[in-house]
Amino acid sequence: MSKILLITSSPRGTESLSTRFATEIANGIRMQSGGSLTVRDLVANPAPHITQDYIKGRVMAPDARTAEETKAVEDAMELVDELRVADVIVLGSGMMNFAPSSQLKAWIDNITWPGVTFSYGTGVPQGLLTGKKVYLVTASGGVFSEGVYAPFDFQTNYLLHVLGFIGLTDVELIRIEGTVQGPDAAKAAIASTGAAVQALLAKVA
Ligand SMILES: Cc1cc2nc3c(=O)[nH]c(=O)nc-3n(C[C@H](O)[C@H](O)[C@H](O)COP(=O)(O)O)c2cc1C
Image 1 (cartoon, rainbow, N blue to C red):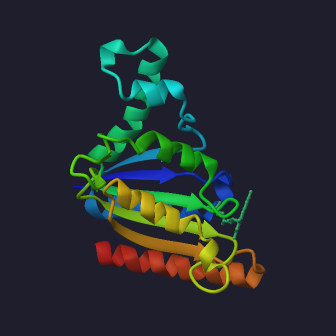
Image 2 (cartoon, rainbow, N blue to C red; image 1 turned 180 degrees about the horizontal axis):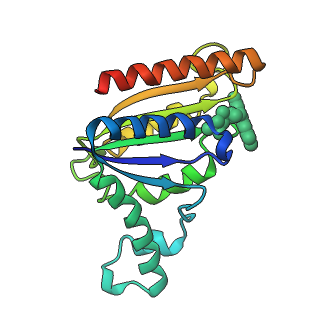
């Protein structure tokens, strides 16, 4: 039985395609594996922007922290703990100005933590969140997987890099893209990603 963590981060509410397909994947895996599902909606329940309390507090002994530092570190550790216990992570991200939403970036800033999710102990960076399966769903209005905009994909490339940096290297990528290129293109993109998600779930079964 898998412990599944679904993280959604698009500010587009019920219109979000990354949220829609990430939710479909998480629910599908749960139905098939009989596992548990935890949902972290970073828009309804945002991670705080990191502050000096967090940056200073996380390198201090717990009993040396101020109340504000303790709170900042505990809030961030709650997010890390959700990742630590998960076997399967489904992450939805919608492109906002060529990058992940600021809600998702705030979460990344909380959980990318030296000595906790990555280490420089051996001289080279080593991710500490190992042994987990990740399904990453990225949505974008334009097409970034190929063509002239490919060099400007600061969403998918960045997410794959930072996930790998903290040890999440087993990532299956599902893209939905080209949705602003007219209603027919949007319909085709949704149909094709829907089919890809069904194929993925059939493989998981
Ligand atoms: C504020 C905002 C900024 C956006 N910036 C971009 C962009 O830089 N490039 C792009 O291709 N699409 C952009 N889009 C379109 C979204 O990437 C597209 O609607 C995508 O489906 C969003 O993900 P979601 O469906 O999960 O919300 C933007 C949309 C919004 C609302």
